Image (cartoon, rainbow, N blue to C red; front, side, top):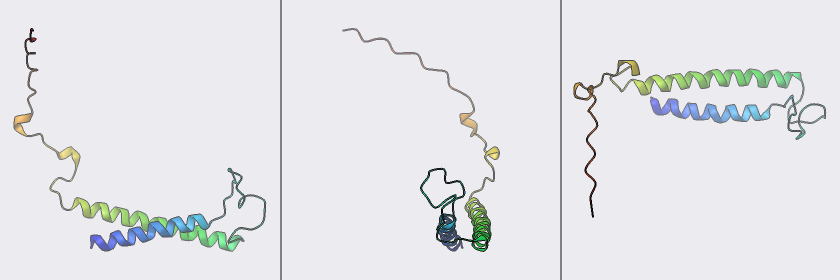
Amino acid sequence: MQTIILIVHLLLAVALVAVVLLQRSEGGALGMGGGGGGGGGFMTGRGAANLLTRTTAILAAAFMLTSLALAMLSGAHTEQKSILDVQAPAGQVEQQAPSEPSAPISE
């Protein structure tokens, strides 16, 4: 089960990166073309922008759900459910006093 969710998670990650890269940049902060004023771009028009925005949102939501599922499955194999539940072993609660330094070796 965990392997299937992991594979779906990786496919979602690759698809999410691809969809984000397909979108036209609006700021053009780096001045690399493709954004702002000039025509062009792989997909133009309001309809394509809405489709890519919705696709990004759906993929992001699915990515988050698979992330939560993987986190829950990985925690199911341990006895402790929280780091706040960790108890120190009885022998290690007391701190030991520092040992006396050894006498210097005279030559």
